[in-house]
Picture 1: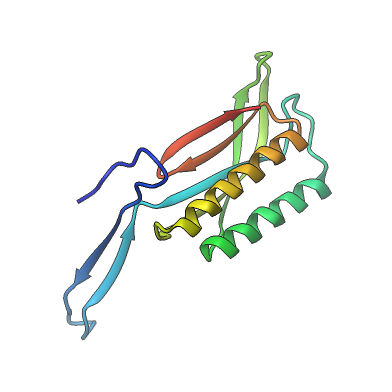
Picture 2: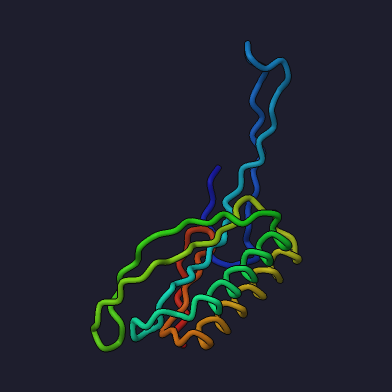
Length: 145
């Protein structure tokens, strides 16, 4: 049964047991989870100025390490993003999305999410962002700075 979540404390983990088949002699237990967390790291500021490459690499490294330390993984996707800033200028940027999936619902992971979101806000101020974005369980969360 799939559930929708409205807050950090309301995580859900479901186990699925697949019976033995011709190719697998033992049953397989799959831990399915709706627990997912992603952050978006742009390479430009709110005025379309490129973020210093060394500074950006340091932030990405720190985010990556925190994801690995807290969640055991860091999935990265690279994409092109477009948005209008407060002046209605269209900003075209390269964005890195760092994600973690299938983690458990204990206090350690809730604290990790809070720490990474705090770090994301610091990144936003340090790199002159209008907003920062994270997604928790498919729910986008935009923080205006």
